[in-house]
Length: 150
Image 1 (cartoon, rainbow, N blue to C red):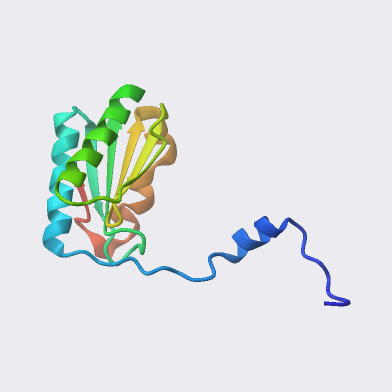
Image 2: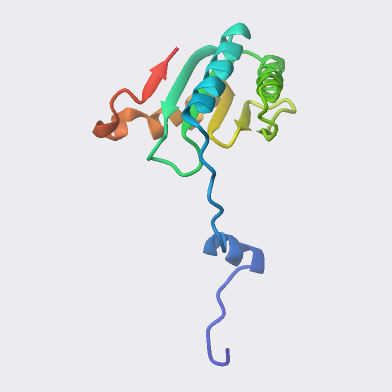
């Protein structure tokens, strides 16, 4: 437009700042499948000796998932193995689309099943990011009991 001031930044930066053009709705899953998936994830983490497993109920609080699982591993290889085991066990019950990020030797691996987001951390990274504080019940008194420590 003639006479209009140009906004600073690249086209990509402007697009990111503007956000997505359309928001895809996440399909809700049956409660029994959600609970079955959650049980498989937490049992797998316990079998793999994950530490301080926490389940946070996000229903009604976040649009990206209904539950968040946070757990700690001692080493990169343990964390990568935990992620692989969860992905395989979910595939065995028919959940084919599990997105995994950071599985190549990172302090933080993320698994996104659509309804459940799993964060696997080394202890230092978990303390740094503080997801339990960010999403925990202490931020919203109406959500008492939404954080479960296993």
